Every structure is written in structure tokens, then in C-alpha cells.
Length: 361
Ligand code: SF4
Ligand code: SF4
Image 1 (cartoon, helix red, strand yellow):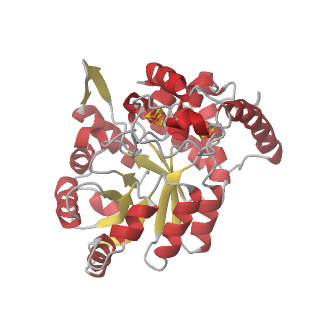
Image 2 (cartoon, rainbow, N blue to C red; image 1 turned 30 degrees about the vertical axis):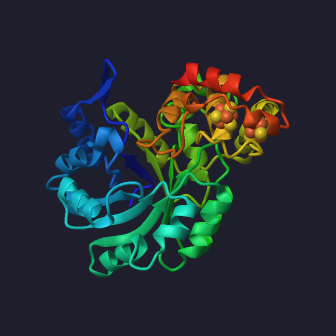
Image 3 (cartoon, rainbow, N blue to C red; image 1 turned 120 degrees about the horizontal axis):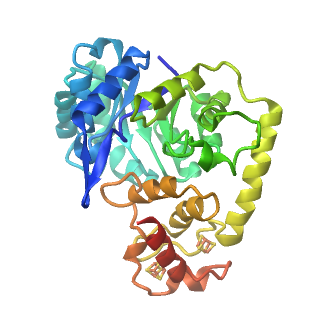
């Protein structure tokens, strides 16, 4: 299995009016190019690319299925598991899924419904016994503590974890080490900050001078320097991006101590600026309108502090029922003011949420 996996969620597309239109021919070309270049791990989900990711991937891999590892997901907010699983098999044109994930799972859900007798975990276990699933896995954006608790409660049944990790977002480092200590495989999403962190102009501020001539390479090398990472998923949509990422993934040089220290210092400096703003203490939570206030501010900071506007917008677009981030965006604020009474930073949360929404929506 290659260290670089293909995240099938940012296929070639164009925006027409309010709609994102996916270019199927270009998408198939890019996926086949990746296969020919040696990438053998493809990660999709029923909801990706306007619900077309699985079917496009299925067409692209026709005739090559046997040389690939396929990962897809069970949407815990969607129809029942068997419906979703059968639909995934059909769309992907396969008779088995190598890695079947609970998608974006929260501890509350897992403890209550995921582990219920005869529920999704039992159903997945049965599918695995029948050879229809290779490995049971989960992805999560929950807190590190909660992800570790999910691992504990699913011990002996989960074999792999998918979580967010890149040089700006390292909160899951302990989680990944914990997963590895329990014998699980670890794949990470967003290794280059949703594809945009890899652009040299946008990383100049974050990466030290002379770390590398190509910051995409540095961002990936950073992720692969962590021995707890087995696979880094990158959402690639051009042949050039595939070439660039493969070069980085094939680079055997881990980041040097000096490079690590330099990156840590720059990121720490930036972090101070973000902490001055919102420390993610969660005192303002829960918001009755369902907004994850610190999470919205974290995404806003990618734009405000790091200048990663495109990345921040993509993250913001994932918020909501159809997105990866299961909460409301800032536009849901009713102005009740409960949050501001609790904020030790004395933030004008309502005002800042408005600004965040204006900048990122
Ligand atoms: S003011 Fe807005 S963000 Fe704050 S608690 Fe009320 S609805 Fe939530
Ligand atoms: S209470 Fe203030 S500092 Fe704490 S998470 Fe909420 S907005 Fe951030």
C-alpha cells in the first residue's frame, strides 16, 4: 500500500451559479493517472463531490479494482447501514470494501447507537465475517479525548482510524499514537490543509525560509515524519498535483530536527496570535443554535492569522448537515448573547461570528 492515498473529495469541478459541477471525464482521467503512477489507496464517501464521488471512482477503476484498496464510509446521519453499504458496492462496482468507516463519528453517537445490540458495529462485524469488509474503521472530528474513548470502547473491533493532521493542526498527535499502540492503522486527512496549504505563496509565512523550495513537499514530509502516520490522503485534482505529491511521498528524508524546530517556532508564534483571540476553552458552549463557536473561530483564524483564505473557506463549506463538520455555521446565530456572558476573553462573539461568516461563506 502506498503512503500517499487519494482522497476522492476534490475532483475537477467548476462553479456555475450556486452549483458545483463535477467534470466526470477529467475526474476519471486524474484517477487513472494516479493509479498508473502507483497510488493504490482511494478514500471516498457517499456524500463527497455532491454525492458523485463513489460512482465516478467506480467508473474510473473499472478493470483495475483488484490492484487497489478502497475505503468508503457509513454516514451515521443517513439511511440504514445495509442500504448504504449495498449502494456503495453498486456505485464502486465492487463486491467488497477494504476499509469501511463510520463517517465523522462522535463519541455520543457511538456510545448510544453505534454500539447498540444489532446496531451498526454489529452489522459491520457481520459483513466482515462474510468477507464483504476488510477492516472496520472510523473517521472523526470529535475532541482528541473523545476519539480516544471511541477507540477504547471499540477495542478489538476497530482496525483503522482516519483523522485530521497537518503542521497547523496537530491536536490529534496523541490520538494517533494511542491508535497505533492499540494496533490500529492510521490515515490522515488534510495533510496539506485541504490542498491549499501546499501552495508556496500561502505557506511562506508559516514555513521557515530555506526549509524546502516546495512547501507542498515540506507539508507532506512533515506529516510523513510522524511514525504514527501510515497513509496521508490528499484530495488531488490535477496530474501536476499528483506528480508533486508522489515526489514528496517518495522522498525518504524525514524533516531534520532543525527544520522541525524552525516550523514549531513559527507555528507557535502564530498560535499565540490565535490564542489571544479564542483559547478554545469551550466555556461558551453549548450554543443553543448549534454553532460550534471555537471551531468556527479556529477556521476563521486560518484566514485571519495565517492568510489561508481558500483553505478556511473550504473548511467552512464542510460545516452543516451535508458537510464533514456536524454543527451549524455562524449564520445560525440568533443573537441571544448567552455565549458572551461566559467568554473569559470578553470576545464580541456575535460580532466576530458575523465577520467570520462574511469572510468565509
Ligand atoms: S449569541 Fe449566537 S452564538 Fe452566542 S449562544 Fe446565542 S445563538 Fe449561539
Ligand atoms: S468562551 Fe470565548 S475563548 Fe472560550 S471558546 Fe468560547 S469564544 Fe473562545
